[in-house]
Length: 415
Image (cartoon, rainbow, N blue to C red; front, top):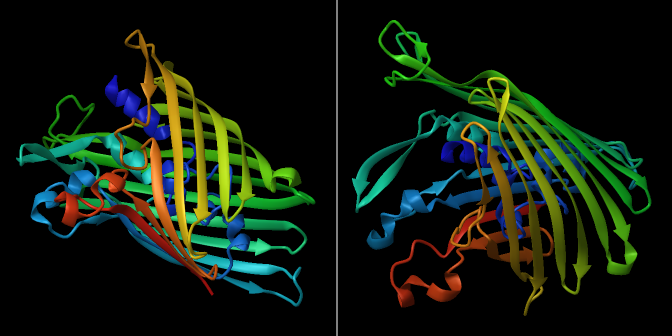
């Protein structure tokens, strides 16, 4: 049951939780109801909103991988750093001239990569300091993670975008595949100003995943006469997803009302998963800052071998706020997200409530987030995600060995 719940929840993060970077990580964990630079990975048509920009992330601090450094004060190992750029060029004179945009990012871990690895199961290693160290997943982490994006702003209120993403790994011995993993995705999107104060956004992405590895586990169905077994997590199985949202301006609050709906379908680990999210939110500019809040309904169904084995239904409430304090270049951010699901397991004739983000989580699944930002002339922006206990520990010099003060840092520069 626990493995099934992990699959359901991993696939059920329709808002794209794993794609979030520093600012969005703090501001409610997702950007379903406001725009941010990471929106371009879901809808490349949004490149027209962020022309000529460099974007990079130092990565995030994985507590489990770095726990040994708490007492040794060693250097931390950061996970999944990435960087890239978006370049734009106007094809004419005037503010309404068409604009062509091209973007490329390397090493960005798409959330589908993480879902694939988690579905393969974890491999545990030796005990270190009384704790069993996590060695990784049964599937090898794919390499060559690459985003390529193209955008075209027609200059009449319509912007189009197209994107490609790929990550691949294959380990062979004597021409036999020992381990293979891969995610291959295409994305298309539109950003359309329907009327003054009314914007429409829609995007679609689809592709396939592959994941297989050899194992000595005899319970694996695919037997190899050589004496090993092939475990297939997925075998060229397809997935697709659609996102639609409207931004309707509300002048009285200096903001926008945002309805949103998303639907995803994928095959993973012999299961067919349908995931639906829909909700309403608002965002508004406040004095020297920004605020947003939203409420979403969630539904996930997982069918195995043609029968509806598991389904979950629930909701998510989230918010984020940021504000300049003391100086115009310094911001403080705080946000929160809470998600509940009622999970029904037909196979085991059981059901229970699941709390997705618990209070003691200090990562992207946490209940609350705290962060800081540096903004220089709206060109250079550096965003920090603080560990939740920073207000209690302050620094290692005062409170003793701590793992880190921050768990994620990213930066953008517009030129």
